[in-house]
Length: 161
Image (tube, rainbow, N blue to C red; front, side):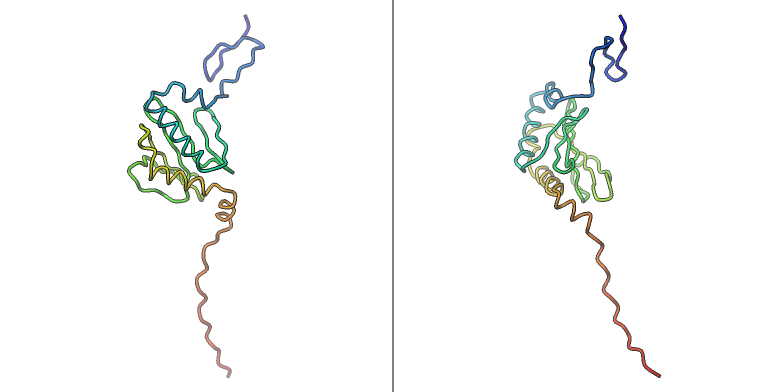
């Protein structure tokens, strides 16, 4: 029998058989979560949905939440949910495990969630802030913002000779 082993998932693929191990779903990423993490995930998702119109989709090992662009994503792990939240400022808080610059204007904050009770302010406030700054109008404003000009120096009158 002709075929090959998928370099990614190591599954044996028969010749002519369709295979796409990169395609995943939200349900597939969250199906093996323990009860505490599943409840935390459901609360994160409900909180994000309450903000308004957006797209939620699975991509590789993450669940993305986006408007014009992704404003946060969740990586379900065995013992915790890893939230990566994009803001325009750097947070200094005990919940934030890591901070990295994602672009000229965005900073990504990595936060671990292990229980439903952790999905409350200030985390929900940060998610809301990320949602708000991901609006198309907010992104245009951020791109067109310029540094304020220093006040002009008063001119001296030149004397005529």
